[in-house]
Length: 292
Image 1 (cartoon, rainbow, N blue to C red):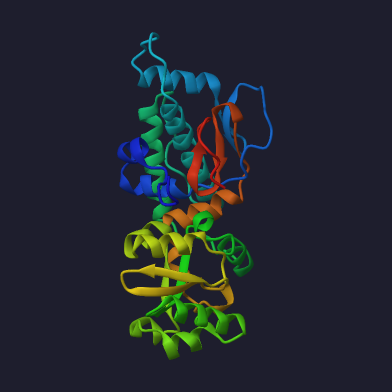
Image 2: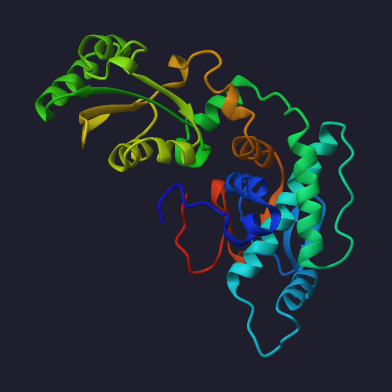
């Protein structure tokens, strides 16, 4: 599964597209230890007990005890709970009274409560994030941070691309080389910059080979030659210090990136028996490969 195949599916359909998008970027400390405490997941002092999870599964399955609930349904419930609690905690920290919580132990009620909380959260300005915190998150790379800021130099042959890489390795500024030699005149005028976007938008905007090379790169390390229908690219995830002052502002206000920062500051735990909670991917069920 590619880096943009994030959590949506059933949760997105039940909670609505906006919440589905937000679920793409839930982040947390992960599950470091095993707890035989009857708790399936926890955000701070708020817990989803195994009994409550089982009740929701029975309700969703129609009380048919002959059936085994699919693992993706457990994951859906866990992510709905986590989203709801993370957003409610952030609203409270901003001095906003969260909407009413779920009225009963049903998935439908939890989804309604999470949707109401998400709507209130979207209407609340995000708390400021320090440059140091933004830098640390950005430098983890676009797959982990959901922030893709790229620049490139487009040339006609692999040999020219290798020459560009050699010049960059010798210390020539990327923007200067792009302005001098890139055949993409639009981006060359801006030092090769292609701007900043979340990884979903990035994957939809550029050709697959360009996307894959960029998402596999390390911030500040040029890669190439990368061949596409347009020629041969030298691609770089723009170093944080080279970003324009407000380049990341729209992303920091977007639900996915905002949730990434919010949840990293909280105590979020998932019982390992149900899976692992991993950065922007949410709960990864048992039997699926780790993504971080």
